[in-house]
Length: 259
Length: 225
Image (cartoon, rainbow over all chains, first blue to last red; front, side, top):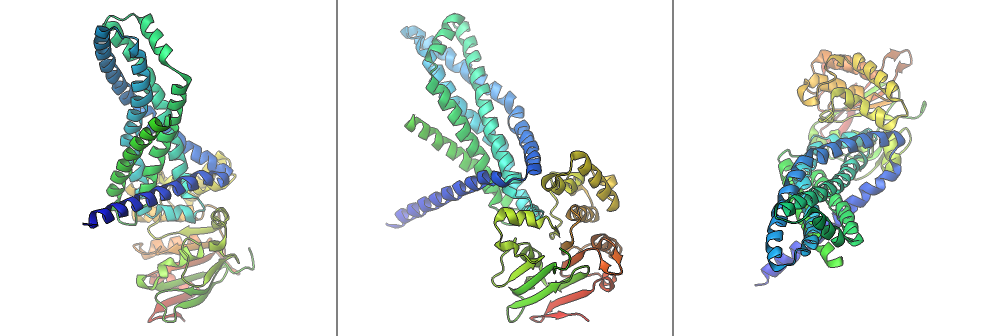
């Protein structure tokens, strides 16, 4: 009778403990920047650039396609349905709240998690299993600086940049959809711009940073948490992605609550 | 650093020793080996010296300092004074052999890019891996990986080199060549560097070149005569 409650309690304790461990991991990585040697900054910066290349630039086509299709479908249906009700001005709020504010950051973060979160977890887990972490420390190189910081920075820059791409493509695709359904271009821009507030822009920036930190931190944490068996690598990759997705949805929910 | 003992283990706990602890000194300008089965804990000596592992009891001093007691950033900087080659070479799989050798120099030295490249080219040539420098570790042979890993460990020209299970899987000839490179040449005063070799096996051909050989067996640390 009491066993399920105990199980739930234990699960909750484990989840909180892991959240704490991840927060310490993130803080440790960020604070390690203070004593990153000057030449090491150049090395770390180069890795960050590579990370942005793999994470952001290579993901642009996927983001463009998804944003264009999603926005086209949604705005097409909205123009038809809201037009019947004489409420086409609501398309602006729909675009800003649903696509720019919610779906854009969420889908972008999920794309980056799927593409790069897996890669980060698997790569760092392999580093650990192959004894490369000890070797780095033995050479006087802090793994948090060399491995985690550039991935974290790269993820934040990439998610943020891709959200902007997603939002811009969505607005343009929405324009095409609205035009094809008989709405004037000027009218579309007018209602979308009238719906866009400073708060929406601020929220997009905040989501870019928070989701980027999740995508950079969670897979790194799980990747470096493996022991020394090669069989742990795919487990870490899977866990890193699953926990990242959960964290992104939870963070998205928290944004709705606090904004 | 001259005059200071490169490595001293003081009352360090090791599973394979009956009374639990041992003392050991690695003198300057000479090669010292500690051989024993993996279960004795001999493979942890390098990590203990560098503060990567904290022993249950005792401490290890490297050039008079206990690295494990230093703040983390100081410990990292201090470790650059030591050439450390962990078991299994520790090369980064996503870097070429050239970039592996260059990494510690790019990360921890004030050398310009040109100086680093020149030094790396010299090291690769000295260690006989310049022709395979653009390979990734996974596509290089075991000997090429060991040569590269040793070149990387010696990138800063350290006075102390710690090699873990370095000779396992190498031919005696290759082991002898790499041992000479690790020692950095021998003069009347001894070799240029102090060498601490740990592992389960030591090729017979190398034994005459090692001044101090210790063995952990039967629950005791003994000096081979």
